[in-house]
Image 1 (tube, rainbow, N blue to C red):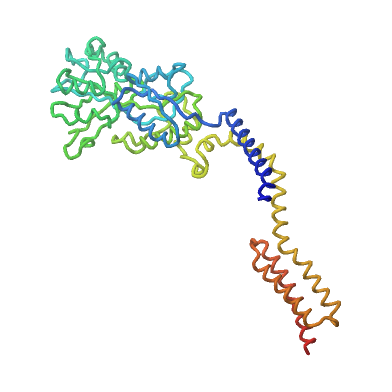
Image 2 (cartoon, helix red, strand yellow; image 1 turned 90 degrees about the vertical axis):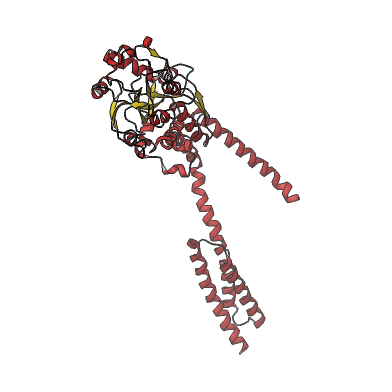
Length: 434
């Protein structure tokens, strides 16, 4: 109990020093903004849309690292682009290709292609200019579909796509209206795995159309490319679609403010790869996620992760340290410089402690050797036996000593010297017995 009370002040002092060190470290981390935020917001469309579903999937991935993703519900890509430009808006957003973005926005990744799906009831001309009075669902206000419809109307001069002539329906609502016969055509800019497309592709009353002069439209439509949907790619057994279909397509982009924390960029790229990597059913989806086709300056760290993959250090260090390793060094290096003198002393001190386990016996072995030499004629059997027992005890201590291999050589050197002295004593013991 007395020993415990004597050590208590040192224990309390140690705790205080550790607390001060932890507090100082936390202060430095906060000042350098090394610790990442625990939440961020995304502008991601309406519930049930492909963008909203993707945001939910991102949130599940980010949640593993304790990051809360707050989803802002919007009318679509156009509103998403506006939200990320607001002072109090979203940190990140999913935005359709071809939609202009404000300054201070960077592209994290092009995640997948979004074809322009055009479904019609019955036989309809492939030229929008010939659709006449047919009612068309062309996306709600603020959606990327509505923007594409406006641009196609301007390119083709199709009155049926003018805002006053179309139904302001998009996504699942437009799909329901088309299946119910409330509209004759419907346009959707959506990835192939959008849930509401399944019923449209399976309906015998509807046809998936290729627009006339698709290649010309792809060249005139900002951010667009032309892709071919192979026959049978959606359902081989039922030949869906029954023949190749040329589709205009845009690229979904995950964009962010240019001051987004590097650690969050790291986790978002990880989420994008997990959610979108290798899952698209369109041949063009194999090219994504990528750092191309962004239409805005690319975040350099995100591009590096997409090109080179993640650092193997993430298996051993927290992701936020790996994501900004150079900045962490600004904290670690000064601490190492302060600890360097101690780091130099510790190995020498450790070596001295281990060496002492061996060399502390040398003095006694030398004393025994000197006694055997100086008093060889006067030593009696009991004394010689006592000295031998003492040498045997030292030998046992050396053999039991817990020493690294690098110090074991010293022990064996002493054992060799000890054996030499013991043999001299044994010779004197035999002579005395004789």
